[in-house]
Image (cartoon, rainbow, N blue to C red):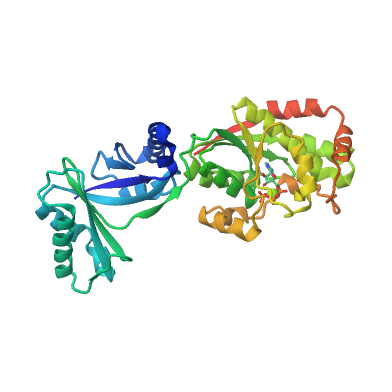
Amino acid sequence: MREIILVKNGELVLKGLNRTSFEDVLIKNMKRHLADLGTFTYTKAQSTIMVAPDDENTDLDDAAERLKKVFGIAALSRAAVCEKNMESIISTTLEYLEDELSLAKTFKVEAKRSDKKFPLKSPEICRELGGIILKNHNHLKVDVHNPEITVTVEVRDNFAFVRGNNIKGAGGMPSGTSGRAAVLISGGIDSPVAAYMMAKRGIELIAVHFASPPYTSELAEMKVMELLKRVAAYSGTITTFVVPFTEIQEAIRDYCPTDYFTLVMRRIMMKISEQIARSQNCQALITGESVGQVASQTIYALGCTDAAANMPVFRPCIGMDKEEIIKISRKIETFETSIQPYEDCCTVFTPKHPKTRPQLADVEAAEAQIPDLDKMIERAVSSVKRVFIR
Ligand code: ATP
Ligand code: MG
């Protein structure tokens, strides 16, 4: 039996004139996600895109799992293709949906014809097919309002197809339709969630990670790459820049008042990230900050951090409780990795009593104590390591 995947666009439908280009980006992204599974033919029809494997032996389970993570897809379903006559539609339905129909208690049939020459009208297809399903599965009842399974038959110009329930898609907008941004990624719970949330809105991601060997280990860096890999399953490839941060952190320790360590560090992270972001044509930065979570995330501290950046900073977790952030991190399967205990550079040299109501002028004064900071920043930026995460 020939099987295909039907993809329903999400918000794209709202985009009016831009719809075609949005769909084209979506198809390009689907191709990238499915690239190593084989080749597929993509056909657009109204708000549906048909994805048909060129080789019948292609692993459609894997393909459907991957497509569930592609942003811009509201729902998807697998469908069996058959000849456009009732005999074939009936036998295909009974065989293809055998398991689902056996397990369900209620069902209904929906039919759509784009070929108006088909001898039966939609309600007649529903009646005939519904009757036969009832005869073959006599435990089933029809429920037109809230069925456990909806059997959908579509009669197209050259063939028909039959499918069961839709599967929920990842939603959002196709990656690359909303510009590019650089996510500041730590090994924590919040920043991978922040990255996922912005990618969901169609933003293409690059990532910046600060590493301070020997205070932070190789394992900590591998953990960050593992987190990014999980985000990349949704967003597509993430070019990642690992910034050597030891020299700067030691200078902060040596020259700044203890209470300002974290804030000065966060501001320098912003400045370096902005430089990398600009060089990569990004329009914004993304962080995992949330108001009040730690001392460096009070409204005053965030103001001081923000002032170091001259581009918009997106903080999608800003109003979320930790519980809410964790819920998303479980969904995108980053949680278990995030909670592995490796040092992040943020936890090196952390002060006991950080300022919770810092004044920008004081933070700037603390930062000004570091000799040749600009040169150090330049050195860090020029020795970044670039890694492609897919
Ligand atoms: P997370 O769970 O994302 O680590 P957090 O609550 O631990 O967040 P902080 O450690 O204060 O918060 O970091 C706040 C934000 O700063 C992070 O969400 C991330 O965007 C950025 N950040 C922290 N450490 C690093 C790092 N080593 N490299 C890049 N960005 C970082
Ligand atoms: Mg952290």
